Length: 429
Image (cartoon, rainbow, N blue to C red; front, side):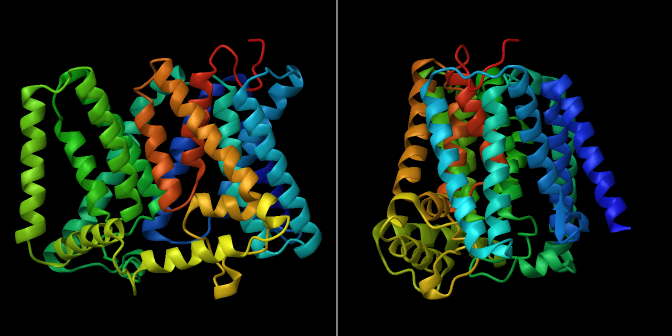
């Protein structure tokens, strides 16, 4: 039965590649639905979304997404087999080569271990997202699916608000995701969606914020609601990412003289409201938010952060870097090696940059920093500053937590925008 199921899902994957190859913009439909499914799974099921398991291989929903994007790029590359000479091509090709070397070395040493497959999945869906959106100019196609995006995000917010209301008003929080969300020092039953998915809400909130500032000149109620949702989920890494994007939007708006009186007073009232909640509010929510800002202040002042997740992350980061020696210092450890072995850490290092250093060494980390710096500088020089907040947001998330397909989408779009006339693996069309 599993063999038939695997064949069916692989056939569907090929069909999706065919459909997306015909209309590259349809990838947005797949991504929006994928995001919705993962959020619902986060809330209600907390399970790995496995489509089939045959011949010792587990075919998961994230695998399908990665294969669809890579398959579409390869099909287009076969039709138009040439590359353009530009820096984004060079950076991406060198980074890809380092990851392939790390992957093959890991396969020869550890085989198809769980750790090797974990590295493969994480890096593949991130890298293939960059490839897709750097190659295909689908930026304008996103507008066609805006209504679908708005609908999905409103449904997610509605579900979240219902769960929050039941939790706050009557203390009803029976879901496993609500319990698991309490298992860290900054935990809360209100954190029932993981950071990876809350990043999507943060990016959407930035989109609404940027649109309001550039068109209406004030914040609409929906923008305030989604911004509040980012805060209520209480993921510090997402706060930092959203905050970085917000600062960029604010600076750009100030430079372009788009801060209206109404917007100024809205921001002032929101700031006063937050201050009151943090200093006069009571209950777990106010306490968690207050402690989170207190922790950030300690980190900025260099004070002790013992017995916190931030302290644990710092130990893991140091262990990953200290573990690099010899050739590994240059090209990293192979897939499946793990992270922070010296301190017995077996899961993600909770920083995309540290993960990347661990697998590609100083060379790979240097190339990644150069690529991101190039995108930021070129966006500013070409006047595409409206996209800059999203790039800065995902960079903040990568540093504070990890990289995911959403980060790849934004970085890939950034590559396309800075090289629109000399794009990555650009086709003749």
